[in-house]
Image (cartoon, rainbow, N blue to C red):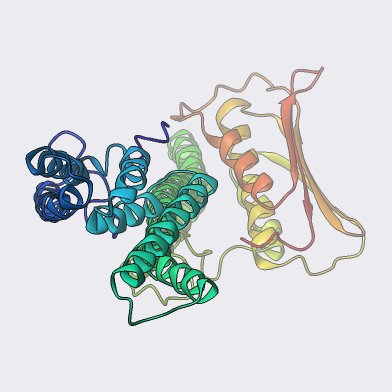
Length: 433
């Protein structure tokens, strides 16, 4: 930045630069400078007449030079240092009071380095002191009836120079500091606004992720609730068709079991729909609600580990050979962990029905010191024709998502003998969500 071209606000009070004329940011700044330059030019012109009478120079020349010196004030915003130097240069002619005052204020209020401002203000003060000293001596010389010692004249001249120099400089420094403070506060406000925009964007991204996670969880829960029951119903329907004519008693028992499974499936569907309605109500609830709207609540009265035996019996009733063992001392695991273990076993048995008809399965539940392990292992199919069942391919993914949500580990894959293995390890206490 050029020191002679420092930008100064239009009215000296600060403000953001705007489109205007030449180096004026606003039109009112141009008209203000034009008015000050006119006043200064008129003053310097009148004082030039007095200077001409004292020196014997042609009055027209002094008036013209004074007018040009005073009119230079219109350049105060563009070249504040040059205008101050001009006011110091014409001070011996005892002209330019308005020029000096406005020029010093403009210099102090501009972005010129402070050391330059102090140096030029000191030069102006010395020049004003000398001019005042000469004026006092001339006054005493013309008025023989008054007497004043040189020390008194010197002190009076210094005080007068300070009174002329200090106020505009101090006012300009104050306006400069105030403008910088306003700009700093404005920048801070802009920074806070940008931060708020970033926070709003991040909040929108988090909300979108929460909605995606909610949709995924809803799909996973619907799959777990429906797939197992419906798969068993399809298996029983096929068995019912096969024995309907050969063994009416067994067919009747299968039909009764099929009806029970249908009713259980409907009950679980109603529970799931109730959960979804609850989540929808909480989504439109006030912001002071305790539970976030994007989090789907746990299943009310969801399955627990005590129901694993019943789950195994249902698969056995469908013709599958299932062995169920429990190891370790039973201890409370928390409803969410128990639901996850139940759903893992349920989905694993459903996959056996779908993909390994006639295979033997082994469900193993092991309680450890700080965790619980579950293993569902099945052998290869014995060649029994499989009942065609639709598969969305999301069963294993859903099991893994459920387990990892609680900070557990999940693994699934084929075994060397052609079977399949599903294992999960979960902490006894669920991870808080």
